[in-house]
Length: 162
Image (cartoon, rainbow, N blue to C red; front, top):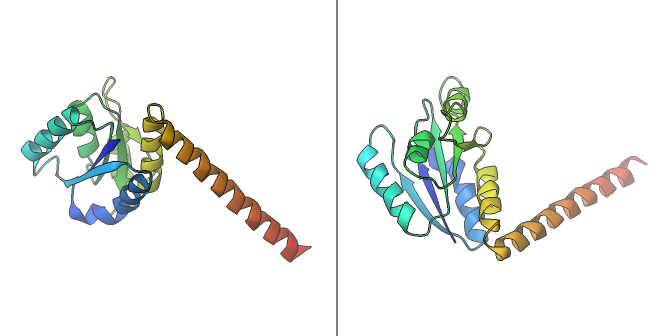
């Protein structure tokens, strides 16, 4: 079970660290790189080529501003690519969001919310769960825990205001 996380700048790391932690907590090997689509295109292509042959099952690509990175990754692999638009410009990540979701037909990038590293990890896990029952079971357990927490919060609210 392997995933690749690539970002365009080290300043993107705080938004993607939760994804790294979540994937690792499910036993996924995570290869993390900082390879700009504009400034390190040869290194990026080499990393994608390596991932295409080393058992990687899904990419998470985070980028801000012009946010070409997820699309460039998707153009060089048929593996699923999840784009994470990163805020940081004067447009608060809207520029990155629009760049990532506006891919041409045939080269899709699944896109999560601005700074949505956590949901990128959970989406990656859902993709891998198709093949790995242990991930599926872990996700079901996690959902049950979330429901339990929500119901506990609800009960506390009832008790407080009745």
